[in-house]
Image 1: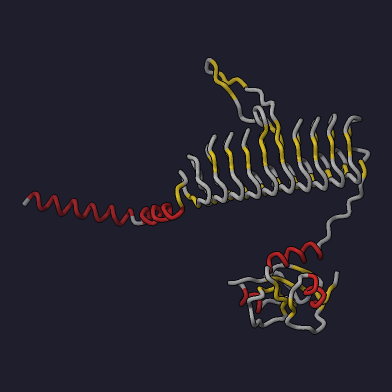
Image 2: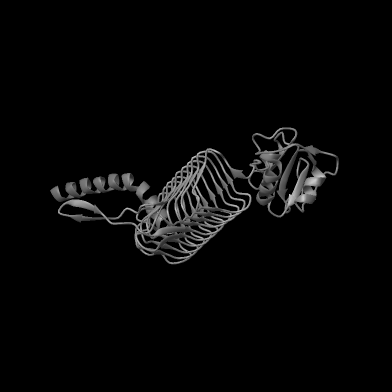
Length: 339
């Protein structure tokens, strides 16, 4: 694809700084950009972008002067995302059921559904219009999937689960695996049947090799707009609010209730049966063990308010000097006692 800088500026509702006929053939990052590419930059990367090999740069509209041809926009990150979609169109996957797929006679497929090789769709499953199911995926009995959903290879969606519209499920994810429920009788662990399901609402993304366990009874719920990274585990009966982030290797224990717009950073976790308020952020490797009020920023294990954690970490760094000082004082005190 080729577009002039002026054409791109019009597409992005931006203002071009150079109206000469500069032709753009690609979109990439600052480090990889070449003479035909456009990239984007925000502070503190503007100087680096000004010296890179890109033909042009998307910059904030607050920047008055720039050393290269540029397009000024309100939000360079959003503009860059738009161009990535424009210059990298989606794969053209024809609708239809591959001969090597197995679709139960009672399953219902909407218009323009694509079912690729070695997919298995079980009894009474319902799949909405324009959904794409990649190879080696299993969709269990009585599963419902909405419209325009994308299910990548080797995904398992077990019986009775519900997936909304415009959902993306990355390779290897398991939706509706059994929750970790056991009772110990006479020293032996006896399985508690997990008879609930998982409900994923619209516009959710589930990362590769993530596991969303079915509820013991009732539903494990992920509400609309939430984004789940790779290798994340949501245990049985967890309820996640809207527009949350769960970054890689996060684990949420069972029956936890999480509000809207909550972020769990990488390798963080959460004790079970807690209530997390709206707009909370948990730093990497943190883990709350008690209910957390809304609008909190926590860090550490056990998780505590971020400023408190920073003071504790700073004090920890001074411990060797403090120990040395105490030993010196003990020595001096011992000498005084001898006198």
